[in-house]
Amino acid sequence: MARDPERRPRQIHRTDWLALLCGLLFVGVGIRYLIPPTPDPVSILLILVIGLGFSAFVAIIAKAVRHR
Image (cartoon, rainbow, N blue to C red; front, side, top):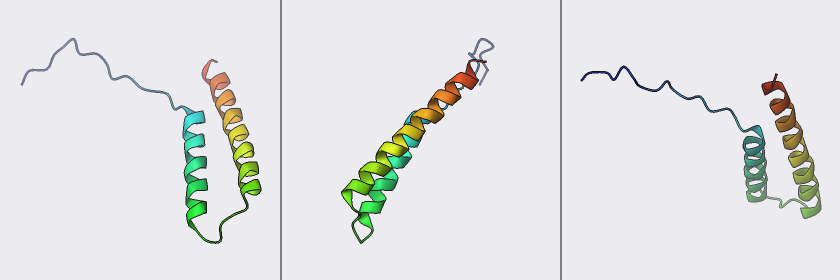
């Protein structure tokens, strides 16, 4: 099997921090609802809002550092 000398170099994808952290947040909330006792919906909503805000903050910082 001969190697192609004109192969494209391997592309590296940057981490999408917003998607990663939001996904982890929602998975965590889903797991929390599976474990008794069921949490108060208002406290979960507060945790979601704070978590999404933190995720957006991390994504903004990562984008600013990446463009330097």
